[in-house]
Length: 312
Image (cartoon, rainbow, N blue to C red):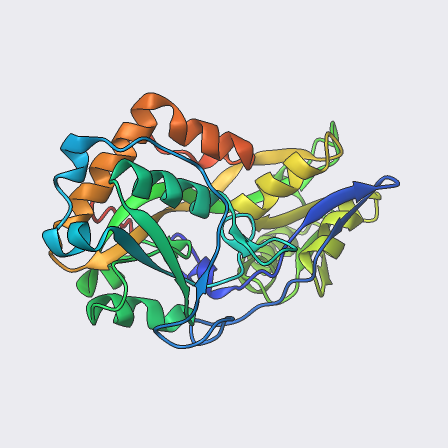
């Protein structure tokens, strides 16, 4: 979880598409996994086509790229699918998402062609250490433990975020007696909500009624249809659901237990500085905001990337 517990990215969400129909939200299925799981093959993986977010090459930044990568003309990126809205496949099999659009823009700024290779989540960092991948892109939480093995360039802030029907007035800090929908086996079901509910009962108040669903689509749909008072999920997932429901959901409170997402690169690699400068450029030009807004993720935007910005 972010904020010092279990890493959120260990929960693999299979959310490939979202749409609203006859007042109900429909999403693809999702399931939990672990760092040793996930789709795709081993460290090498297979190449996949992606969506595109063009960005012009900036010579001064491109010149900072390590010579071996620059001469190859490509940026080899290890990715684990799926985790919508950050990285997942569209119905045509293309890798799409916020992370993908942003990395495409980063590669363009560096004058490189992005080459995405799918891999098991747990094998991405070892494959970076071994030189198979130049960088990882799978919503990695930048943690102090991981920083012992690789360097991270931060690019986003994620945590837990609740959603409710507009005007419902749900307060995550005072949700005693409320029905809260959640994806089964996520940190929200196993850690967050039980702890909140215990605080309620310890204070002599009604427990939170935790309503687990096999898929995130079903949990979100329960709130849209009024079968639950609120839902709790990772902030990118919640923000994306809010965007896709076209006014049927809104935030309940603010994001909490936040920690940075980062791109892992080999320890000591000058590529980290190249990525950082490219992201700074995209922030300055407004391209970063444009990409985040396209996925409804403005709330998680950062003002300044850093190398190794772990909070725990």
